[in-house]
Image (tube, rainbow, N blue to C red; front, side, top):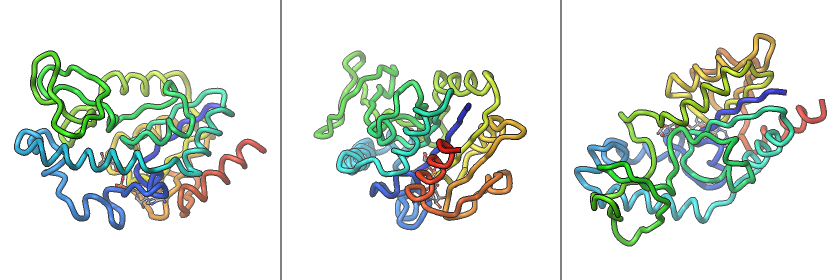
Length: 232
Ligand code: APR
């Protein structure tokens, strides 16, 4: 069986990580233009870093939930599997999903990269803003900010997986599918007689294309779906 899964912030919600646009979501109280753009970082790098450090700590204190574990179980069962997550947390990896099966399309919050030369390193320094060991410019969180390009290598990994054949099962869980590429990948992945299952308590722009809409939380729905797939 060939499987393709896309996840968003809703999958980490039951681990205590706020979503962006849902109830209590980050963007309900905070202005992304002040925190998640290159301009915001240029304007006030301290404010941006403090916010990412707070989020890193919150993720450090969180645990993967039953949704993350079910996705790992499905990956271990499927002949071919790829997860594209918009989440910058490491909960899928901490649920045992191998790195080669994960594409973090919006980056990794525990990564850092130079804001000038692009030098990358794994640096969880939060006392002060780290500086680039190569060019001494400020290091920034290794995430994709609004208005920025998606990482080329990660895009290639998705394209290569989709080019290698259609998928019997596509699951899209916990995302508002705000970005067109999320819907595009989901529709391109599904085989003509394949399933496209949306897991989300609320409707999204993807809902009309789904073959099944599960209006339940991810930690409740995904273990059931995966057990059904494995036993069928
Ligand atoms: N289980 C499943 N879905 C849930 C749950 C849950 N427990 N709780 C909330 N949801 C759903 C909400 O109904 C909403 O549709 O998850 C979705 C969360 O949507 P967003 O907050 O918009 O998060 P996401 O879709 O991942 O955002 C995409 O936007 O802000 C940028 O870069 C950021 O990666 C992020 C991207």
